[in-house]
Image 1: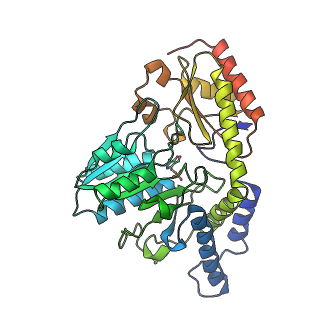
Image 2: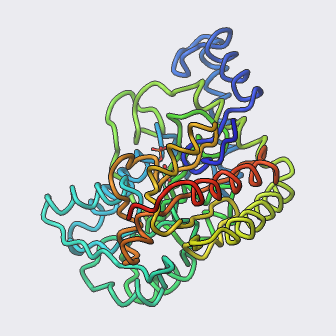
Image 3: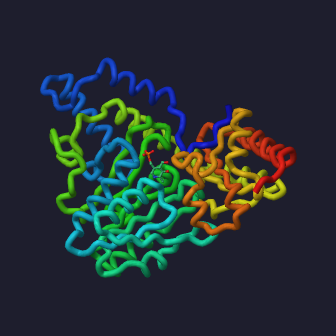
Length: 377
Ligand code: PLP
């Protein structure tokens, strides 16, 4: 199998699975228990928090473990709107966010909020100026992702944070960094964002683990789950110790030789862009600043057919986000591309174990698809 869909999820290295197995079996204690098995686990959880916080570039006390990136996005949006409920009910976001943000915003609309959805240009760009222009005195929250999961565009979150602080210092800023964490360099405590969401399974950790950074401007953050006081009383529920152990191990592995890994991903992406561009009717989509994501359209050939054809040959690529299977992607729709181009968009996303040979096999299969199948769009 050739797996080129790391933006959907990444394989778990053996060392991560081993770390989780050990916690599930021998060291299974509840961190709240008061005998050594529990007390040890409490210490462990704090040490794993330190590992993830170091990689995120923040103090461990600002990092809260969650069950996934979706949870972090939901929590951040609700907490920001709660803190600023007396400031106003306006939210600024983009039309190309992950559904975890878009659906949370839609839910806030049902609670009486007004949401501005900024549209990108045809290459998927969103500018800081565009965001700033939409901010009003009653804007409670701005939520702009760090890296677009379908296009690979990197959004100017640092500039947005800086300009936002000048325009409306009370507006809180959330960035969904699920596709940026350990893919593009940033430090949460210098980014200027009040909330930063990350997820474990995009970087070789288990599915069902994530974290949310909550910055110092968020006073008495609104708890997500009330209960037994875990996660400083903000996200109660017995800690998912094995998931957290796996998350921390994946972070540790990824950080080892990170510069080389990112250089390798950039090389693969550039190589794939070159190989795919040589196929007739193929256009690259997005600006491809993120090292691991490449979007392209085989104009006229439906993307789902491409995914099925390549899938039957053991090559995994996606037609937009894995969370939207079968439905047209809202991200591609927001680009306003011609219908035949939009209908043929696929995404390749790379991980450390991929090679140039993987790209060759994929490019050859795409060329065959183009040459042997009729365009249907
Ligand atoms: N945000 C982005 C940008 C993503 O790509 C994803 C997953 O694809 C998520 C949020 C959701 O993360 P999770 O699958 O951990 O809920």
